[in-house]
Length: 480
Image: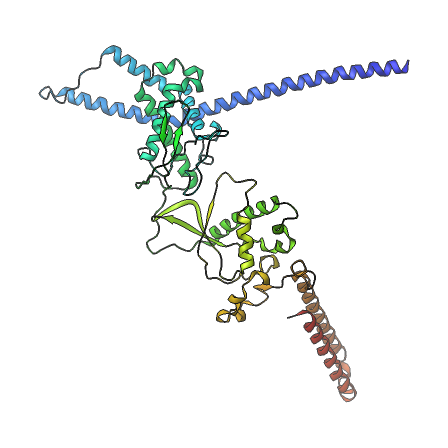
């Protein structure tokens, strides 16, 4: 009887569980559908807002043309300035094409073509996520699972520049031939939209994306100089749409006439911190028994010990997201080789805004002065040759710049700097306590001054000698 009741309860619970799971599945599906619809609405709204300015400009241009036509038409004596009237049927087709090209669905389709060509999501068509143009010696990115390169615009150059205009032509051809594949609602629309209006919408979209990219990366609004060279072929998938992309280097601000300027402290620290995070990721991704993960190298990973990064210029033009990494002259060969080997390792989680470090010449600079132990250089990090040069040891071989290697590096034969510092602090406190006790004893015996002077002179001298001996003993043990 009890068994039957228990079984019935279990059956009821299973039915309730099934109903609950079914309900949760429906709610999840509805939430995903709502999210997809919302994302689509956001994209359409963003396209609409982005293009308002373009439509205003178009209307102003039409107004100016109308004024010009009216003025030309008013001059009956000049036949050359008169323009023939457009055929009514042709005028209606032209007006219909213009209206269809400005519809949100058409703009959304162009957005998707741009995203597909660049290999990114349509939701990432913002200045923060737009991909940069590959730098020299950087491999051209490919479509996942294929050997076809994706489009990479040079946002620091205008649409009319050959390195961008030829790619824009590819986008225009893709929209006119295959736009219906990106948006079924545009299949019939494309038959009525003229190539002139497709070109206008594609060019305007490029200018809008370029504006967002430059605003986010604080680049120049216009860059006149442009260079290009032969590169590899690009196929968007239309079959005949192959094009020579070219290896175009991104252009930026011109180099200062008096040479590279010193990097501001805040900028230098930000770059050093970024480099440190990359190296920490690479090191943590290595196997636990890898030589680079030895505990003796832990102190080397501090912001203050990273090499300095300077701006990179090519043909007098600043290269965005590329720095010249100059190791400091005080660094030992062991420290340099450690960082070089680590830089060769792959980054397990590369950032979206990729930064390229190019090895540069050694920069003359001493080890950093710091109060915290973790920001100071260990002795193995400093070159002995550099210390012996120009009496550098007198100035920089001091605890504020260079500290001992510690147990992990020495195999247990040396104390850790933290231990040495703790003992030095303890000695200092003990000496301060002894001084306080001495001052207190002197104040308490002031009432017996004459008697003390007659009988306690030798005892006082012995106490002072014992205090000096104890202090010297502590300093010899723990202070270099």
